[in-house]
Length: 108
Image 1 (tube, rainbow, N blue to C red):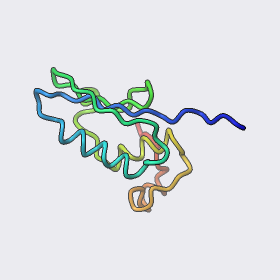
Image 2: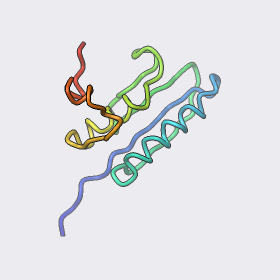
Image 3: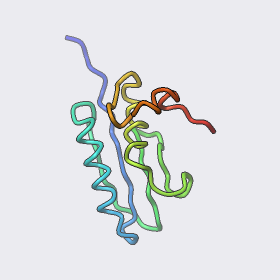
Image 4: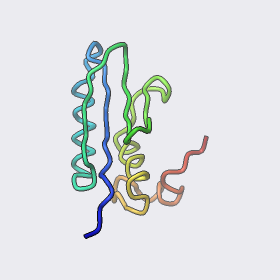
């Protein structure tokens, strides 16, 4: 019997003072609908002080202040896919232009 690697944990920490629960829950729903079998956990963590962070395991993949707002759900799905299974197609989320430009590449 082969032992499988643990499935990744996504955490979304959101500001309760800013009323970002619905935004966070929607993003969680989108990730779970796309990666339902591949993710081990998706956790919403309430916070304060304008916090909005998304982590893939322990790696910070989005931070509202650092990254200038909230991620587009298409970009968020691509970021998760690029860590989880870079060869996987996200269909219409990737689009033809993203594939030609090298999905997952960062021009900065």
